[in-house]
Length: 517
Image 1 (cartoon, rainbow, N blue to C red):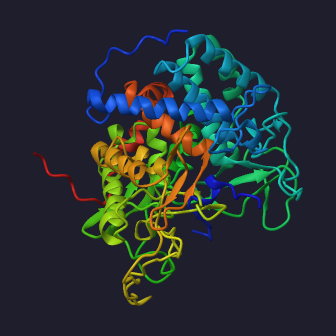
Image 2 (tube, rainbow, N blue to C red):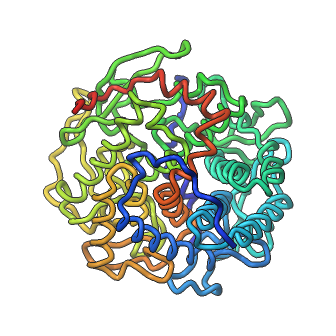
């Protein structure tokens, strides 16, 4: 069975309908309070990093320097998947930088690993006009996949905006953190044009495009004026989702106008019944930024108020700030929303659903396959990403447009993924480490490559595989905690600071102001 593109699935797809070797020297600056850990915590985090890195060492193909998408829990090279993506490759690159900086591998080994991967990236088939990578390659050969390895079914090669956002993120990190390899990393970056995805009529980016007409829905055109490509019929319209990394990179590069930042929905407007299919009627007010009128909406959940994601999952909200210092620049927006979002996930897992554990995000399904998990009420999609196998959801109604339904009397078999706790580490360190310790104590959830991908905390069933994307989020969070925001440094200065930070500084989410001590 072919896995769905896990980044595209969780990204907030909204249709637009006329309105969708020695380590390098450590930095001398003091870590921010959000990343400062106790000595005891540091030892534990370093252990987690060492074990997680072991999974990457097993995932990578020694002939190409490309990582497989996933590998079995025993880390047997014969159990690697026969496909990889730009996101997976990016996760390996930034994880290698983390491994060097935390002294898990010597600097010369890190350089050799990264150099090999960059050389392979330079020869992969891409869409030449945009400089973008296709979604699936064979990790052993680097060949673009046109048939799915598991069953031989036909693939229609696709160029995803969000996947290319993550490989560009990794190349930016290499350019900044590995001076010896800055030139080849920069050469790959300079050919990538995120303007290819930007629809100025909607002020939103498309999910991606095909170079050739695919079956099903597509829109022929070219926002850069060249030969037609075939865009997805949807845009990424939800703001608090992981495709915003592509938006930030495009704005920073001058390829997408800054007005795009305000062209995405915080929530849908509450007036009338046009949006009554969504999770709940939002509260908030209309504001105008750079000439763009925007509804600054928020959802209410169990005494909290927050800007939702699309599905209610952790990685939608918190993968991007592993790299971009959103809460430092957005004092009236992200600085309030991110910790509130973590509190909402904790509230759901420990109290509303009563699982005893928390952390819900797309992951392997312990029963087989891959699935989106989340906290339904903090996602815009009424169908929601549920936290349990039974897909239990809530329906708060939508005023007079849709009556509320009784709240669930019980939840079923909850599925928790450890990477969600690592994403929360910056905002709730003690809670995150306690949750991880409980998972490790109570379940067979930890193996030679660190935490396995997902745990059914009701039945005890564990998905004993390692996914490059999820392990990459773990390594990024640990690298920031142990090495003074190592992976944020390349994005905290330069074009990102000049062009994106001012947008964050001017915005005010419709959220309660935190009390001053």
